[in-house]
Amino acid sequence: MLLHWWKNGIQLKLRVRIYPDGLLIAVLYALAFWAARQVSVDQFHIGAGIRVAALLLCPPRLWPYLLIGEYAYFTHLRYPMIETHGLAWFVLGSAFLMPAVMLVISLHRKAMERTTDVWILSVAAAAAMVVTLLNVGMSQLLWPIPPSVPLPSRAARYLLGDFIGILTAVPFALLWMRRNTGTHWIASHRLPTVACLTAMLIPGILATQLPPEYVTAKTALHLSMTLPAILLTRLHGWWGAAVSLPVLSASIGFSITSTGLPASFDPDMYSTQQFFVVIEISLLALGSTISHYYHRYKQRDFDEEQSANLAKTSQMAGETDLRQRALDINRIGDGIDTYLSETADWLKRKGHHEIASNLIRTSSLYSRKFREQASMVYPTALEHVGLYLALQVGGISEAWSTTDRMAQPRLIGDPCRLTVALQLAAYRALTEAVALLLQQESGQIRVSSRCGRVGNREAILVVVALLDRQQVLSETTCALAIRRLTGRTLAYDGTVQCRRNRIRMVLMDATDAQRLVEDTSGLHATLSTVS
Figure 1: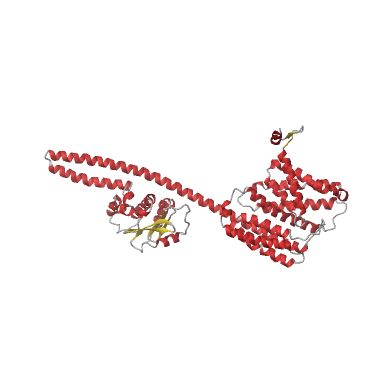
Figure 2: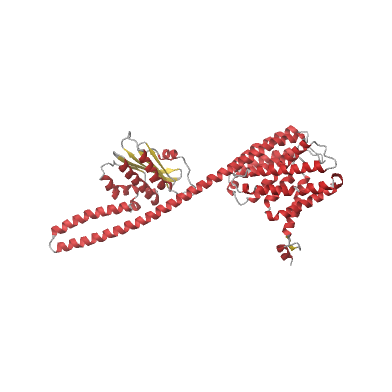
């Protein structure tokens, strides 16, 4: 029965269902607000941060319970003040604070969905201004005797205190909301992170323990906390700023000297607070920007990797189909050779030796041409002897020799260290580049290739160049080369470049889980110059 009541709540006659977990939230919120009040002053009001943090943590359906918790707290706090400050202030001064901040949060809902977290500053500023306006305005209008502190000074203290209080508590709420994201930030740079936190906490704790007269020492300790805060933000982006802000704000807030009276004010720390507010805003903006661009570039790298994988898969599917066709063509050729051989044997048995010899010579010639054409569909020899021998003994070599424009190739390195898939991609890119130069340019052509390593990955550099160094590739040729060859090279983390009289291509074997990111010129320099 108790479990049923806890899950389904209490149904009132007004058709309003009150859930016990909501009441628990109201009680916890009231206690948190009360505890925050014990360590707060006008110029450092953590309760303002507790209010905003609770609204961010709880979905809108639970906001009425937060409102109940705040009303309960204000009833406990301000009921004894009715005789001195009036019933109107007791009611109106407590009724509109939480609804006003609710409105601020609601208006920022769309901004919260964006990739940057600068909206926190907007929420903090708007909530601080609205609450300050209500508090100062209600006390000025409804108190029988207006406060002794001048209105502008009081408003400035409240505004600064609420703003810093929000920046102290809200980052913890956001870290909790995003606890399942951004773990890569936390896992990386562990030692520097611990060092930065230690370098912040030690001066912060020392500053809170110094006597009030050591104002200069406190300020120096607080300033020493800014450098590790900046480094932490640099390491972890928004996450670093979200950790640094509460530490900075809490250290300054707990260093404020309080007299225990309602209008307690520390002018020395007030000046320090104004300076550090600028630092905290800058840290949060810097961290948000770092995280924004980090995730942006990470998404771009992921998209590029996915595109490369799709292109590689598509190429391999096409090569598989071509391989099967080449095998079928070879089987047909084997069948034709067998039939012609049997026919030649039959002619010999019938005494037609000359006809049989001519048939054998003719069938051998066309069988070789037939297999050369089959090898141009798919270079099966590449799987057995590697890329370089496939270029020299396959049909493509015969096709190039008939043009009388191909110089002796320069092939360096061991292509068999590369995967068959990468060798096939290099073969297709190389033959297509040669065909392009044969069609679009004049003069002799040389193919050069070098297999080597780029970092910890096997790679191949292919250069298809005109022998005449003074001849420059036309713009049409360069555009066609980039358009036709880029797809093949990108699938293997490679590049295509047209430089003066040559087309240069780099393809890398994906043997490591982590991609190697290098500048294009660095890739060619690493593999050395091939001309």
